[in-house]
Image (cartoon, rainbow, N blue to C red; front, side, top):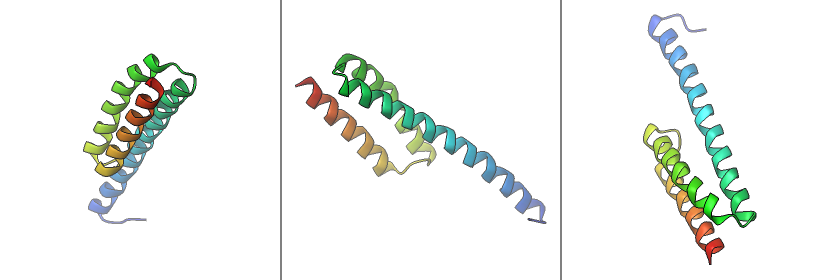
Length: 88
């Protein structure tokens, strides 16, 4: 266990950050799943509505460093491509 004050504080911060990151990732997985099920169910309008909120969440996660910027772009691109294909 850490013995210096700074090490104790860093440990507490890492626990908070880990919990925050876990919650963000859980929200992202749920949002992605809802869009994918909407696309698979041919409900394109619901998928498009959910896309805006999901893109906002992805951008927020990338800005906070929860996910990498390239991963964020990849998620958004793949979602947009799937919705465009479902629309056609």
